Image (cartoon, rainbow, N blue to C red; front, side):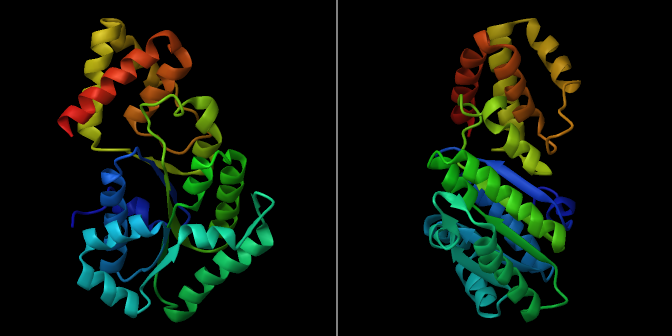
Length: 260
């Protein structure tokens, strides 16, 4: 298992990470498995709130014997995302009191079981809401998570089924999500994504590609979490070059998948 993207990000209390992933969640599985593995190796308590399919994939990446051992010692706890979400939803929106009782008690239970350990959590309940078109509910749930983060020293990693090359990854759609997180993790292999996007921009924009790169460097939104270069460039293109963005990103997706 490789070291998680940045040990400092995953261990820092209060950090709220997010990764956007497409229909092939290989990069998500790798990053979440590394996030879990990094925590286990350093003695952290870890709670994973995910779909059964993703939980199985994370365990397979960790190695079944290790995952089962850590589950038995309560260092690693898995919860079903759909079932857990239903426990605190009311009329299509998360209810704070129910959320605090369900998730807050999970956090407190892990603290009681291993009081000296750091704590980290991975969750994709927000991603389930997003995929169902309940964007406002997803944003509200992120705010509730941030309240918990403010009152307890743990780190949080969220996963969203959003293809960064698709039109849904647009400033007007994801602005509030970016504001709710401290860091955005690359949606795939960063070097391959960057090479694919650079090639597509040269194809479509020619010499203007360099102008775009310079513009992106000075256009950081201070309200957002730290956004990787590829994702930042895509958001800039969607907002400032809408006539060319679809062609650039369609080519970039093709180039990226060809080398993945």
